[in-house]
Length: 175
Image (tube, rainbow, N blue to C red; front, side, top):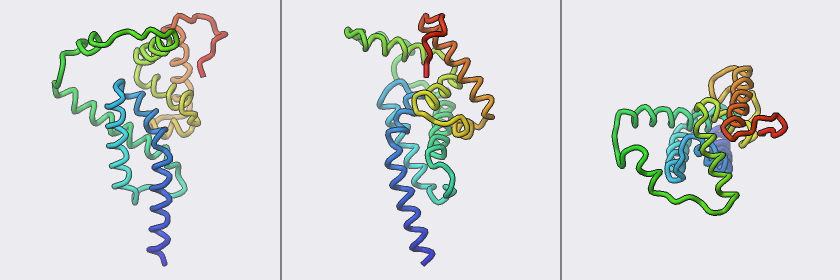
């Protein structure tokens, strides 16, 4: 009977993991500028999560657990890649693209570039809380810091993003 109950819980967790794939993709975009790199990060995260699903503690938030795995996976990848040189020299790839012609696409690109200029820990807070709707407590757990740190990073991120976008007034809130 216990084996059957455990198997049901595992199947339920697997189903919930599948439901969280869109959120994982959105979170991966904070780390990876190229969609294919973000998809690779999501795939690696899912592979690790499913292989270690028995280590997930029922009663805790699966989304936070998955985001933590993704964040750690990205950090490990980043450390490894800093020791490797692959592909085109830095800066060449950005010159191979053409600028968008639609106004909204141009504005979205300006926001994306401004986000990418933010320090990673600020960008991460904006995405987690503003774009993905995570609670401060969950963001703190995902990032391994205090709730107060989350709030101050988010505040600084919002201020810096406004400056990057040339919005100096406080009447245009972000998030």
